Image 1 (cartoon, one colour):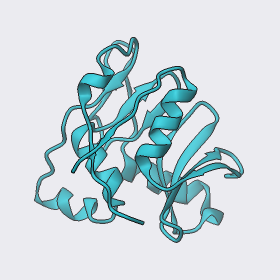
Image 2 (cartoon, rainbow, N blue to C red):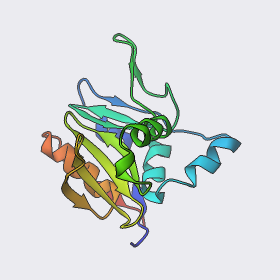
Image 3 (cartoon, helix red, strand yellow):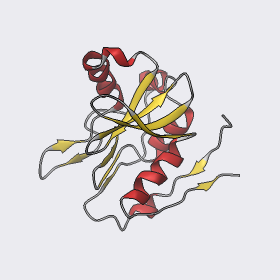
Length: 155
C-alpha cells in the first residue's frame, strides 16, 4: 500500500453538532513506542485528531481520558485498552486485527495481514466493507451519516 499523507483540517468538523473532536496528541517518550505498533495512516490521523465521536461513530483515542463528554461522564475508549478487551472477549479474532473504532452495531478494524481497514459486525466480526486506508473508511462513515467530507492528500 502506498503511503499517502492527508491534510487533516479540524475546521472541517466545526459544524458538527453534538460531536466530539480530539485535540492534537503530543506523545511522550514511552508513548512513541506504542505508536510504532499502529498503522502509519491511523497514527497520522490520531496525532492530529486524537479521537472522534459523532452520530454513532467513535474513532478511539491514543490515551485514556483524552476525549470525554463531561456532562454525561463518558469518554471515548483509547485504542490500547480497547485492544486488550477485544482480545480477551474475542480470542478467535486472532492477533492480526486491531480495533480502531466502533459504531452502533459495528466495529472498525485494521487487519495487519492485508493492510486494510474494514467495517465489521461487532458480534461475529463478519466483514461488511473493506477499505485500502483509514481516511477512505472514515470518509465513508461520515458520508453514511450525512456529513460528506473529503480530505486532501499532502504533496
